[in-house]
Length: 382
Image 1 (tube, one colour):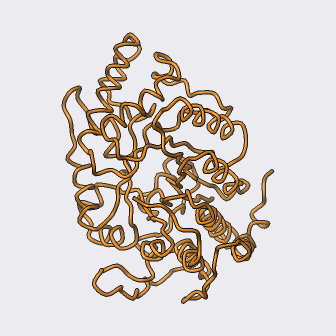
Image 2: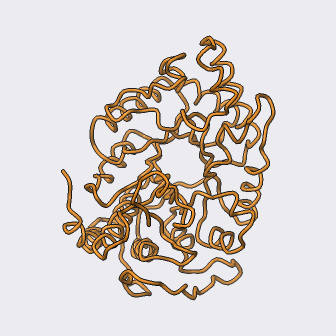
């Protein structure tokens, strides 16, 4: 079913009312007004927690009160060159995800020659600011090194398996003890629930997925290992297939710890039944995480679209808050300046919670939901 933007305008208010009715969620009065209407938003003056340098009303600090780590994907170029970007990343988030610098084409641009420098810088930044790191990603059909794609079709299955194993063990071993969660296999499913027909599946069948988890665990037994995909937020053929498959992997002894829900949403489509899907994966004994949240819309943004964006952000965070096995909530970059959306979806954008380093209404929506969730169920955190 598709929900019109007009129907979605009241979703934020309704979602907050729903949260109030959930057992175990104690509501506190927000210390700031409800999200402002669209328009320029002044940078807030944040009270700072004594001795920490972290604003007490930051997403990071508010998430800590309920045991939920709030994260962002990080643009390594900006991290190395922009002090404002660095400051927001450090103050607002308790986890960071490598947007691109841990992907294979960056890590091993020439076979056998590794480029760990940019990723090492991100890890060092995280360590300096008391943050955990999500490694993204080890196996994906995109952003593979040119040397591999040029020869992949002519390689034997054994050769492909050897190359994949070497890649995974080399990268995970390099970061051993420094990565909290690895997206081991990224986007392995089609919308119809079949496996993506990538080079790994063509040469090795679905066994490449189990192998990848085994090799990653061998290289770092303490890292949490995730399968990550998009549109698992909706109940349907794809999420049903993914759930059945990860349950099969666990039954076979494959060391898979969790499932990542990318949560790239769009105001022109209906809201997902995300809570139901988080709950059913958690009930199957998996950690779950929101790994790449953003909410795009058509441009220019109207008042109704802004309300719909607020509602979708609220829905995704509140769903995570209501599931104790949901251990992190990550936005896919925090600022529209660096968003992937305009380059991928023509005529759409404004997907993030900041623009030009100024917090948007979406930011205040997340802030409010975290302030209200002071009594949510505690989470097990490493």
